[in-house]
Length: 466
Image: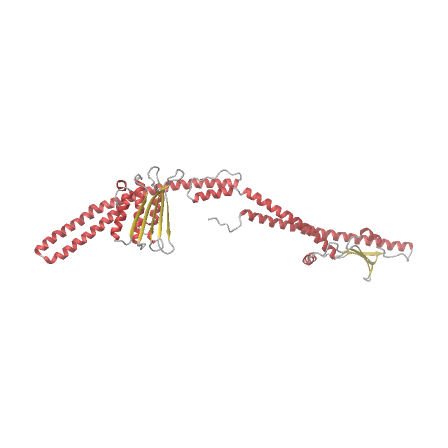
């Protein structure tokens, strides 16, 4: 009934939280990479500006003291104060030639980053970009101070920072997912109560009610559920009462129709038979040639009388309250065996005593059996029909029920219950008695009708073998 092939709500929400968390971690990592790149470029811009100012001061000092032998350019002091692994500092003359250059430290002490990351990082940033500042003396450009950081060093540092974030993500994300899943499982635990209530409603237990919940959403569901259960119980009670009244009205109409047929049509057939007998007697004396026609009229009237008796028997069955359910069903089966002449053959078996059944229960069971046998004989093409009526549930912890089972070996399908009162009519009678009906067809042939109705207390005696 419940589909378990799809992930439940807890898993779906947990996966979504995990995806959002991963995106947040990715955004944080991107932010840190961008900030680190901006900081690095700001730093090398400052270093280039410092180097340019230092070189200008050196040039001006040489000119002030008029000492052409002084070394220029001299980036030793600047390099000593700002040098870091991967940092390069140089002076490029006005002709474009590099006059002096310093590069500090090992370019990569932590290992090479993956090529994919390196290519990705270099496509987003420009790690080898130079910071250039013009060096002037007396208003004339004499060269440029250039600062940059080895791209391999910047890529390795970015990979190191990304690796730290990845490690944090690998530790935090499973823990976060576990906490979210546990919280959702606790929050959604009342849904199991809701599901159990729905299953009870599906099983026709309309007394099912949901308890109060802490969450406002589940409390709203509880109110709707309980109101629905109460409405269904009221509606089904009204429907059952209406069904009982309709069945009683139907039976009363059948009895009225049976009386009308018996009083009017039956008397007319009897009169026709009497007239046919009188005409035959007259024809025997005056016109022997009419004897065959008189006999034909008498036979036709007799056949019509037999048909009428069968119709009256079906419209107004024997008084089950007076004869008892067992005797009535035995008479019904015997009548079918007599009319069918062994095809199909009807069998009946009883397990228990049913003398104290209420009239409504006995009459309802008789009508159900009558309709089922009629359909099996006329429409299923069966050769054998078996009927079993049993009383079950003698222990104190068992409900006492009456079980009716009718099986046949006819054609597969439900054609046997689509005529006359049919399956719908039998269901209505069973529902009026507070029971359940099921109809199953075999794979190749045959069908089985099962009816289970509750038995009133002390109305049946269950016979057990010694």
